[in-house]
Image (cartoon, rainbow, N blue to C red; front, top):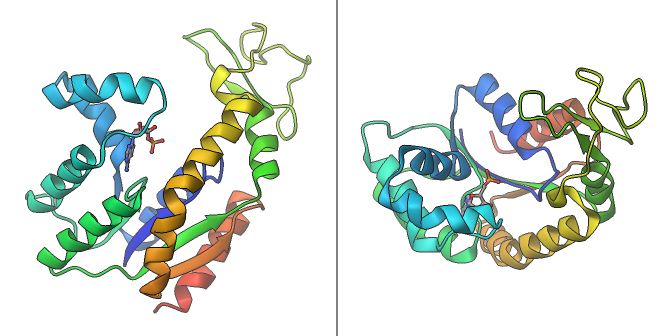
Length: 218
Ligand code: AMP
């Protein structure tokens, strides 16, 4: 099984990728994790991308394309995989198509997690996190409350709404996401690879939706 997982922030993409890895024995290829690793190792590329990632901006296409191509050309080359966070733009999709052709690998499906913006905003802007670095537990006023409102269950600190999770920021990230992914999804739709999967329910329900969509592939 060779999959691309596409979904806006807050759609639970990472959780779904993990479940697919367990079920089908796939390698999860997450470009965010690969780039963070380059930063942690202090490579030249890591130094280049850090300021962009700190601001939540996309890393230039050629850099991410190289990271992914290197991985597929290395001894770690996976036969079965789920892409988490790549391709993220039309131009990345074109580069990825070419890479897969070179590698004699073909995608089976592109899972497109669909969720309304208001639902994402409700999910993310309801997050309240403990600001203490040694604790950092996150709760959600809409789904996972605390025993004492506004206080961390574990350490009692005052919970905060992170800048990243504010409604205005979430809406901006969503806008950016669709600006980049509309053309990408259309590209894969023309190849008849896209499976639209509703992602509004619980993690388990979303996972069941994905498995049902994949049955139509097999
Ligand atoms: P993620 O862990 O997927 O949320 O990615 C974290 C950050 O890594 C993003 O905000 C981008 O700065 C960068 N990044 C990850 N994947 C890509 C990609 N395919 N294209 C451009 N930037 C990316």
